[in-house]
Image 1 (tube, rainbow, N blue to C red):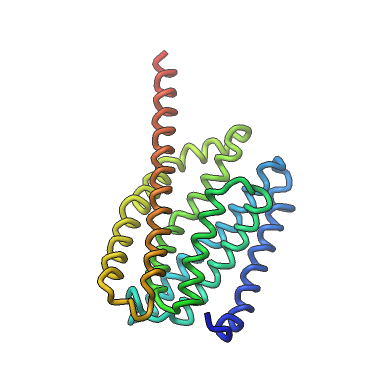
Image 2: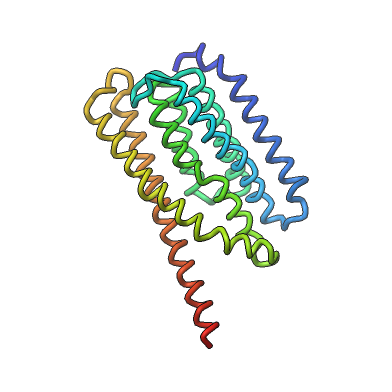
Length: 249
């Protein structure tokens, strides 16, 4: 990691982190102040996720389209580095949230640490490969808006009728979209990424241990996502079956 590059990025990291911190505090103390204490941290986490996910997709797509030489081992452009800094700051803020309010949630803490490893090594260690990382970011965050809305509705469905209706309405399309992205598009892109790096075409700019680490982290994350959405499909089927049985009776 070259010190001048790291130091030149500190203002961006601090600015983005401060932005997410302010959003989190506003959500916690103002927007969700009437929510139950145990729900406010999760809701505030959703708030910063909403302001990271969809903008990150837009910024990432813009940065990739602006790079005519993009490929799996092309050097990062300044705009791509800015998107990486934006996401690094978000994950640092959300990691702080989990360490304070959910220190026993080792799955999410591990996920955030692994994701930060991928972003940081791409941004500050090899300075190449942002194309692959940002496409993966797009695939991960394209469902962010509907997922966070669904999560907020799920948190209040037991005591707010409107939340229950939103949850019921969003569940099927969210599950379908998430399944397509994490179950088909994600694995396909990771396969292409793995084949490319395995060919050795990027070894002169991205050391083997780094791209192997990237692939391992992404494959693990996708596997957990597929397991998670599979369980949700099973729950939805059981809920609809119970509703159908109650109507028949």
